[in-house]
Structure formats: structure tokens, C-alpha cells
Amino acid sequence: MLQGTAYRFRAYPDPEQASLFRRTAGCCRLVYNLCLEQRRLEWHRSVPRRLTAAGQMKELKDLKAAAPFLKQVPHHPLQQAIRDLDRAFQNFFEGRASYPKPRTKCRHTSFRYPDPLQIKLDRDEERIFLPKAGWVPVRMHREIIGDVKNVTVSEAGGWWFVSIAVEQQIEEPALRVGSTVGIDLGVVNAIATSDGEVFDLPRVSAQEQRQVAAVQKTIARRRQGSRNRFKAILRLRRIQARHARRRADAKHKATSRLVRDHAVIIMEDLKVRNMTASTRGRVEEPGFMVAQKAGLNRAILDMAPSETRRQLEYKVQRAGGQLVIVPAPYTSQQCSCCGWTTQENRSSRDRFSCVSCGFAACADMNAARNILAKGLTTLGGTGGHPGMACGSSFAGSRKQEIRLARVRSLPLQGQV
Image (cartoon, rainbow, N blue to C red; front, top):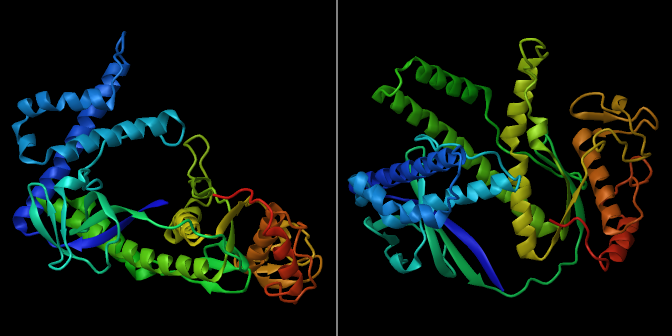
């Protein structure tokens, strides 16, 4: 079977190449925004003309005649910007995303080379050949396996990166047989498992938050469009890019460990957008505890639960395992021993104490055990709550092994 993957490497372009990359990203933003505005205007005409990606690509020739600077950058990345816009509209009409917004200078600094015939790799010299840029030094810290399909050049915090997408011919992974684990994604503990293991991810400290706030105040004081304002924005982006790389590295290590140690992973279906909604309210009906909710929202987004799910989805698929998604309601309020569900069970954010049977444990680990029980129900198990005596170990018990042996032969439901 064919499997697509990507290798992301740090690039070291010289000043001329870096200038070309910045101009190419800017031209791609311009083409994207112009095509977006063209579609918006056509939609409001009395007799709208249906615009497609192919039709707008044909008009690139006339656009280059009107704006000759577009001829100085590669042609294919401009076409890919139009394809990206067309995909954004498809996502909008199918209800997967909101209406496309214009691209901005400080947030969209990437472009794509789609033609593999124009791309060359020199693994010995650690460099890559890109149209109009020539040979660009790249730190290839991993071996590239597969046929190159496209290359994306991006900039983050002043550093340049190349993402090389390849297709690999691999054997169909056999269905793994092994242990099953439930995981809970929280704020106190980033990832807590039903086995009692905790994966804590690096967080933005209070000192780093003050540093970010100071740079943001500097940006607010600078004049719009000034060079000093752009320098302050670049400084903020470098700080945020460093935080993102640190968080991504730890998250990849945690998810890889989970996939390596367990054949079936069960997690809850978190609605992150609803969880991080603001409580500010309106002028007529102002919200309450707005600052506290804003701090909780930052803590949730700092843990990036959607990214954890995305990584588990493709890693489990490649390893031949299974990922089961279960509903999230009441997993944090239900007792994993007796099944009693009430808000009073959560004595605090990080502590669970059942008012019925007196069972006390870490709130995230208790929720992970409830998630595991729901997942076993989805897989065809006996369901309900684990139903074990308080204080006994659910992981590794003979009852769990018998249940897992019975459900592995059943068809998987709810797999992502």
C-alpha cells in the first residue's frame, strides 16, 4: 500500500534566497487575496459567474501583465495559492470551516512547489534544489524514504523550514494484539492513563507569559506599518515559535510512547471550541468570571488536545493499532469504582472523591478509567463502569485480559 508522509527540515538559505522566499510568500498571499475578493464580488452580482480554480489560474497571465513583479517568483506556487483557496471554499460549503479570510503578512508565510520533476535532493551534501532559488542548504537529520511529491517552504520566527512530502510503498500493517488503555486529556495533567501513568507536557511559565505580554505591549505602542513595529512582531513570533517547537517535541514523544506500548487507545471526543468559548458576554448581558475563564482557556489551548488526537490517529493507523473515540460527558464526574455520577464527586479540579463509596483518586486518572470502560463498551465489552473493588488495580487484571481477548475479534466501531 502507498503511504504519504512528510519530512520537515531546517533550511539555511543565503540572503538572496531568503529574499526570494519572502517575495514568493508575499506574491502567493496577494494572489490568494485577489482571487478571494474576485469570488466575493462575483457572488454579489445580479448574474454571478461561477469561478473555479482552473478558471482563475488561466487569468494569472493577465494578472502578471498588470503586475510584472509576479514574474520574478516561481509560477507553480501562485497556482497552488489558488488551489488552496478553492479547497477553503469547499470546506466552507461542506460545513467543515468558516468563510475563507484574507491571508495576512505575519501569519501566512509559506508556499508550495508541486512539481517533483523540478525538485532535486542531494543527501550527501544535505541540500535541495528549488526552482529559481537553486541549491538550498538543509539539515537532513533523517533519511528520506519514498518518492518526492511536493515541497513546502515555510517561515516561523525568522527560521526557514522545508517540508518534503513523499509517498512510500509499505506493507499493510497487521492488526496488533496487545493491551488497551484509556487516556484523559486535562489541564493539571496533560495526559493521564488508566494505568496510572502521567505524561506532563511543557507549559508556558508565568515568566514567559510576562515576556510575551511585554512584547505585545511594545507592538501596541509602535506605529502601524513602521519598521520598529515589524521588528517587535518578529521578536514575538520567535518566542511563540520556540514555545510551539518545545510543545510539539514533547507531544510527539508522549504519543509515540502510547502507540508503542498499547494496541488499542481509547480517548474522549473533546469539543475544544466549545470548551474554550469566552464568557465575556455582551453589553446588555455581561459575563462573569471572565478573567478566570480566560486563564482556563489559555491552559487548555496550551495543552493542544486536538493535536494530541491528530497525532494518535495517524500513528495508531501506521502501527496497526486502533483508536476508539468515546463521548466525553460525565467521565470526570462518574466514580470508576461504583459508577455513582454527580458534580459533588469533584472536590477540586485535580482531586476526585466519591460521595457514595468514598473512593478517592486523582481526577484525571479516574476519568481515564471511565473512558476505558466506555471504550470497552464500544468494542463490545460488558460496559458500564469498571465495577471493581475500590483500591484494586484495573490495569493488568485477569478480568480485563479476558474481556480484551473477547472483544478483539469483534468489528471495531467508532474508529477514527
